[in-house]
Amino acid sequence: MLEVRGLKVAYGGINAVKGIDLDVGEGEMVALIGANGAGKTTTLKALTGLVHVSGGHVHYRGHPITRRPPHELVRQGLALVPEGRGVFGRLTVQENLALGAYFRDNRGEVEADMARVFEMFPRLAERRAQIAGTLSGGEQQMLAIGRSLMSRPRLLLLDEPSMGLAPIMVQRIFETILRVAREGVTVLLVEQNAKLALEASDRGYVMESGLITLSDAAAALLTNEKVRQAYLGE
Image (cartoon, rainbow, N blue to C red; front, side, top):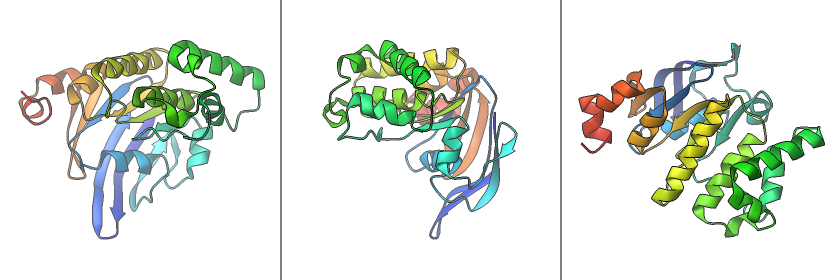
């Protein structure tokens, strides 16, 4: 589904991503873990065309997408739920969801998908006419995920979905992510809660200072002594 080779991203004189290789197979959930500043968010932004790639290449479903504009990638089924949620704060819940399907023409299918999002997130259904900026952090995260699902993604990139949320809300968000994965959407998950991310994923990558330093099956990473000490607090 996704093949990344030698990916580099530089901000001025700072090399944020230093030539990484990464693969995501169709139907997989893959975790990318690491400390703050490791380059995880920059990697997702590079994959989705939001920052300039200074080296390497990215292939999605066998086709080169390096330096393609974000709106083209969304049409091709590549969607990002950004760090910090990024909802349109002055629009309603329903308007935010509709914007997730901005390029789709079949109104019946769009309405069916919106009904599915409301079934997945009953709290959003209750607040469909509410201004998104007045929602709680957890509700905004639900909305950000729901909005991305309105584009019918084949590959969903999630950037820190648990950040700043209460434990019970984190549990609900991860239950939803697992449901989305079970329904056939491929997932690349960036998450600081390494234990939660690896428990949910098939495989994982560890990123440090712009480099991939370790990759393995998620179950193996959970028992890796270095990972346990550095990221699992054990």
